[in-house]
Length: 326
Image (tube, rainbow, N blue to C red; front, side, top):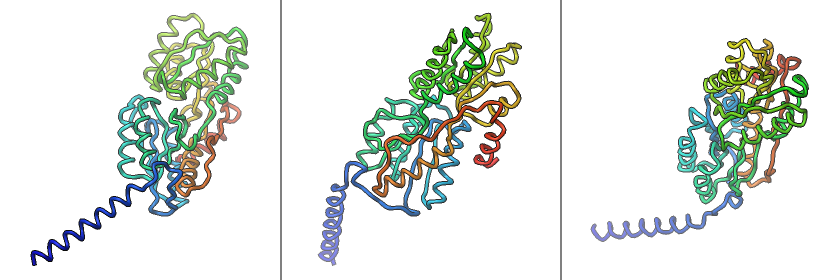
């Protein structure tokens, strides 16, 4: 009996060693690994935060496309865009779950690089959405051309306020490339139209912080004709400060969320550059599945943008609410 048990133990040890040796041949990059589609496919999407309608629409689009294609998708994000470490932990957790593809909107370029390298080494295809990464092995960026889109908004606002107007820019977190690009786009359009930019402040995509900053700016400057915000969260706070002060300052924003569309229809906000976050979510799942299947994925996929103002806000808002399931 003892000899028989030893023999079975040796057989098990041999089988384990063969399995371990076979695993070492797994490819170190996603291009070499095609897994097919179906219920077994698991796609992970990590956004900057889910405490914002923009990201909620990304989630809705991703889940709708996943249901259509018959794959599993997890869309997760921290409570705040400034919680960089929480986002890194979420990426690492998905890698640990051995997702078949990873889609990401990085809050910090540097903080996520180690995790992305780990994902690549594990053979997981990497795609970025909304915000691109400096990690050169990602397969595709899906999102809006932020500089071009912000220029559209800046040009529309400049046409209303005119040459010689004074403008403040309230942007998102310093170091976030999305907000760097949007600031650049607004700046280029405004300066080309002869609008003077008198202040640029980081409100970190926080409505309360934006309100407090705007209150201070209205006390410091005798005249502010226009405020351009690189995110709708900022304009929600800035609008409250402007209304409370009884100022005639106009507001242009970026994101096209339903709350801001309502304010546009009420005449309290001039406009907002609308991305298509729902389409971003759809495109993320669709192209992640292509990558998993070894199909060609374009390096740059533009999800589009348009400027929402009083003349088209009602139609856009109705479409937005339908997609958000409201």
